[in-house]
Length: 316
Image (cartoon, rainbow, N blue to C red; front, side):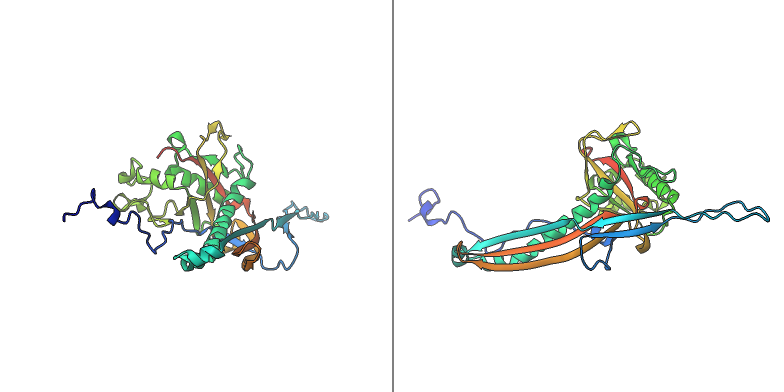
């Protein structure tokens, strides 16, 4: 007897299922390390942090009374305003019949923790641009802390790094541990920059032509003093935002520049409740339920230590 697929199709199993579960690719999370976490916040959900200005200098005239002046004071209010949860379940019948049940249940808690961590990452990268005034230069001491990238079609160029550094310096931000978090489209723009081979902008460009700008989450090289990280979680910009007569298109993104020195971190935060896992069996619905909850808050603490550069993402 001869065998062929056409005459013996009933002998072939149409679908086979692997015991391996395919995991989606995940981006690396790192923004929370730039948050100054508050530890002296024992209860309540609102904390007031007082601030004090600089002393004044007056002209003194011999044999005249000294003029006394008070110092300016202020108050920074921080609130724990985020209460998040991630939950799922598996039914009793699914537990009995599924051959991947053990792997499914084992993945619930790690995936819920990852989902909450991603939510916290997005919040950290959002609070800075959201705290600024849109369509405004947000100038501090003569340096602009929000502007549109100066390249063609609002693509970021190396001059924007220099402008960000100038603005931070004008605000007396220490020029140490300078950090930039940019969109992948910025990495693409630098990988394809036309005058890259001339090394005109920075003597440290050497080698980028062959290796590319990015490996993993960081740039291979340092750009004008900034260690540059790539993130897909930056805040998206509202269509049509215009600063100094330059508009951002519908696919704009807010790239961040700041000093990561520990005593001047731009963001402040508090995690009132770290991710907490609860599980229970629901006898009415005949299923095992798993829930992870977390309560926290983040806010821009030092606006002078943050420059936001709006760039286009549709030029790739």
